[in-house]
Length: 181
Ligand SMILES: CC(C)(COP(=O)(O)OP(=O)(O)OC[C@H]1O[C@@H](n2cnc3c(N)ncnc32)[C@H](O)[C@@H]1OP(=O)(O)O)[C@@H](O)C(=O)NCCC(=O)NCCS
Image 1 (cartoon, helix red, strand yellow):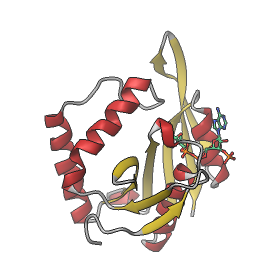
Image 2 (cartoon, rainbow, N blue to C red):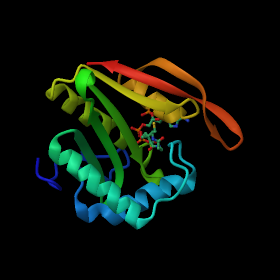
Image 3 (cartoon, helix red, strand yellow):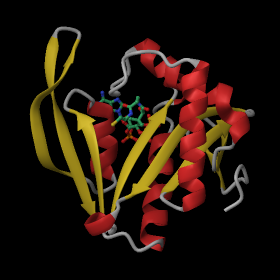
Image 4 (tube, protein in one colour):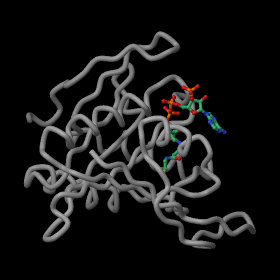
């Protein structure tokens, strides 16, 4: 797949046109703004510290290399030329080569209009194309919106690590969800 080439156009529930495509090096500042906006709002992700531009550049370089090696399928969503969401499917190695791990995030002002679900469906479709048999993900027990979206596309809870997260003075469980393809 050519880096940066559009793979999919989608009209969100609010009428905005969303382009799904693989990321490219030029997305560095958008991706930096994206992750730091999630940290700033206290989104239900593991990271709780903002990222510097240098850290993001190192990270992006590694991820683009993983994509080139074929270990990672990564799609960003773009609206009006800006990255507003990101999703990835990481293929397992060794005895877990048939398993994929997925992750997704959408900028706050673009949520609840179908972008997350559409991105996840694109990951599912790719996972089937490359012959994966099982998908896994981890989500905080307090992330009701994400759990709703994951269940709707066929994931179910298959594991739970009690008190694995501590946020705003409260413990939350990490829920492991899986979907057999
Ligand atoms: C979770 C996330 C990826 C979902 O993406 P999205 O684009 O908002 O999802 P969609 O618009 O496709 O669907 C959202 C659904 O959740 C529902 N929803 C919203 N808030 C909810 C809540 N508190 N409880 C249950 N469902 C909720 C919406 O009604 C919608 O369902 P519907 O289509 O049946 O009406 C996105 O909200 C996000 O990035 N959140 C912050 C980061 C994050 O949590 N990432 C996942 C970490 S595991």
